Length: 111
Image (cartoon, rainbow, N blue to C red):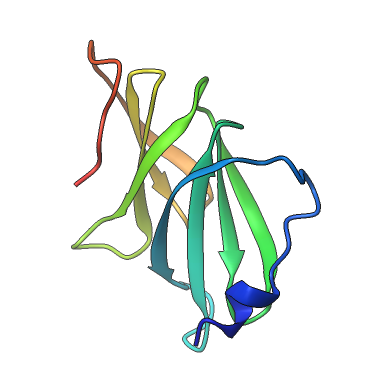
C-alpha cells in the first residue's frame, strides 16, 4: 500500500528537492517495503513505508544524487549515481558503501 508515502513528511529539511527514488524490499521486515530517495542534498534517504519514517541515510556523494537502482540479484544492494561522476554500490544491511565506480561523465544513470 502507498498509504505510508502519503503520510510521510520530511521535517528534517522542508526545502529538500528530491531527484529520484527506488523501491526496496526490507531485509529486516518482510511486511515492510522501503523507499530510497536521492536529491540535491547528496544523500540517499531510506524510508520505511510501513512505519512512515526515515530509517537511515547513506552518505558519500559530493553532488546531487541523480538515479537509484536495486540490484536484480541481491535486494540488499543499491546503486546510486551522482553528478559527482561516481556510482556507488551500497549495502542496505550494513548501511555502508561497498564500492565506488568513477567516470569521466558528468551525468550517470543506473539501469
